[in-house]
Structure formats: structure tokens, C-alpha cells
Image (cartoon, rainbow over all chains, first blue to last red):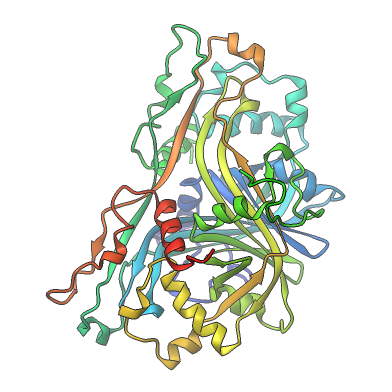
Length: 241
Length: 241
């Protein structure tokens, strides 16, 4: 999972150190980013008056910075001119693991927790880039084909960004792992793979005559893993990385 | 989505009221529980020293109480004899929505945020029930076929529970929804369904001769939606509800 000891890594602290099952923990950029880029859905946690909130939202990564759509911005950032501490988490469920005892029932998964201070994107140039990226990161080159955003839409759209200060990945990928002596027992055990896949694309029923699906959407084809489509789209936009 | 005005509902407060797009908000038990029971993965947010954490973990519901496996318990509940405020969130991504302008790009989804005070399950009888439920809620009757838990395992397993004090569901299920005038534009738009499905079950390579897959796992079959298998399993265990 790592690319050698010299690979760039996120610093380890009491916050992001994987305490339980630390053999499953990774901190290098490559492992962390690969898990992040395989998802468009994240969960963002923040605190208001001591109460934690956990909001599902869409996000994308640019280098070591994460952006997300600010549907939660009103609640999260009101009365906050300074940064707000957040934890942004992505989790992929890869399988259900049925073992020979209850204790060893488990799942294969890949997850990342990323910590930092979130800020509202107010710089006009950064916001303009984000408005393009929120579409083109997932659907390469799509913005150029769309009706341009108008002032009201730009005003009504808010983005939150966070430089990743600390992050950890946690991965389990070993299927059934029973205690040695339990393998002698006549008990059924298995791994059930879980995959998130794309269905048959449904063109809008109100398309004008002659409007067809652009080639740039070829990556989003029936039966494909969502994460493969998302990763390909990411690399199409952020080639430099 | 609701079962009439008299259907039991969670109380609305400043915490769980769906502020943005409140037309997408639901508070009745039936809608909230249906979304919860379609998932085994949730994200739990809690606060330590002002820092929010967002931990993915497995959970299940019993009435209006949620239980989850305490892999996060050590960090979350250390130094906490009293309840700890948490927000437990479940989100299902149902489709990607490509509209005719950037602003109307969206997704179909179902999500629940549930609020309450979490406590460590210390009562021996409640913990014993949870040890069975954490397996049998997902795989009906399976515990009876397993090697029994030993004292060390019981000690090493921790559960956290939370009575739902407030909860809200948020649902978008309308596919492409463009501004009226944008339908006149020659721009391609579509909805791409996303489904989380089960793969081919992989029996443990070390099964003893003659050990076969029990009928109770029939619900977990190749190509089935994970959420359908989970809902069927829930009803098999909690028939009374």
C-alpha cells in the first residue's frame, strides 16, 4: 500500500493514529488519496455548541486539499469567520465476513479519516475554479458543454475547503480469519463481496432531438464499479498528479 | 413516505430540522427506520476536547435505539462515565444526476441523521443480547451454529447504544430537474443509477468436508441489493415490529 519509506505521508498524532488494530493503519499520501478519490460521498463531522453533527455530502480532492459542497455551510459556518475543526471521513465496504465465531465476524473495508480546519471559499477566483471542478472532477470537460452559471446560482453555491493536516487510512482485506483451532470445527464460513456499481444510464426524457450522450461519459457505463469511474475521471482532470 | 399524520415521529428541534431543501425532510419513524435498516454501515460523530471525529462502523436498530460495535469506544468513551453526545448518520447514494447547468447537478440519495447520548453497554444481560444481535440481526439464526463466545472475547467486545432523541431523514429521488427554460437547450442530461450489490459468495477455503452453506443465508445471493438482504434479515429477527 505504501510507496517506500520516502513516500510523502501525513504526520501522525493522537488524533489520527490508528489505535485499535494499528496493523490496519496507513498514513502515506498514496494510500490515503487512492481511497478518497474512489468516492464522491463523504461524511463531514463538525461541532456546534458542543453538539457533533455528521453530514453526508459530495467532495473532491486537489492535492492535499479537500473541497465539498456547502449544503452544510449555513449551519456549520454561521458565526464562524475563522476555521472550524472538522473530520472528513470516507468509507468503502468491500465485503461481509462470516467467521466461525461471533467475535471474528467482520468486514473488509477501506476508510480514511482526514482532519483539518475548514474554511468557506470566499476568494472569487477559488470559487470560480470550484464551480468548474465540482462538475468536471466527476464528469471531465462537462462544464464547457453546459449553460453557464448565472450570478444568482454562483451566489447560492457555497464551498468549504480544508487543507488536510492529518489523515489516516484503515484497511481490512483478508476475508475470513478465524482462530487456528476454530478451523477444525464443522461451521460454515464465507466472505460475501459487496460492490457499488453503475446501472443503465437514463437519458432525460426531455432531451432535444439529436442530442446524444457525449464520449466523455463513456467511463460511466452499466455494470462498472462507481469507484473505477470516479478514479478515471479524477485522473482525466488532474493529470499532473 | 409517511403513514399519515398520526404516525409516530421524532420531535423536531433546531438540531434535526432539515433547514436547506426542507421539502426533502421527513421525521416519521417509518421513513427514518426504513433508511437505517437498509444499511449496516453508519458514520458516528463525537467530540473530544472540541475536536470532532467521524468514525465508520457497523450498527443495528432495536425499536428507537441504535447499537454499534465499539471499535471507537476506547477513544470515544474513555473518561466518560456519563453519556456522550453523538450524531449517527446513514447515507445511501442512489444516482448521479447530470443536469443542463452546473447548479442543477445533483444526486438522488436517502440519508438519516440521528441524535442522542451514547452510553457504553455495561449491563451483562444487555451485552449478552447485543453479542447475539450483532450477528443475528444481519445473519438470522447464525449465532446458534457458531462456536460460543469465550470470556476473553466478551470482555474484548464493547457496544455503544443510543436512544434516538431526534432524527431526520432527507430524500432526493427525482432524477434530472432543470430550470424550465433550460429544457430548450441542446445539452445532454441523464440520471446514472448507483446500486450496492452482493457478489458471488466465497466459501472459506478451509471448510471441513460436508459443511455447506445454510439456507438461512439464502437472502445473501449474487446480484442482490445489499439493502434488500439487510432489510429481509432485519425482519426475520425483529418480527414483532
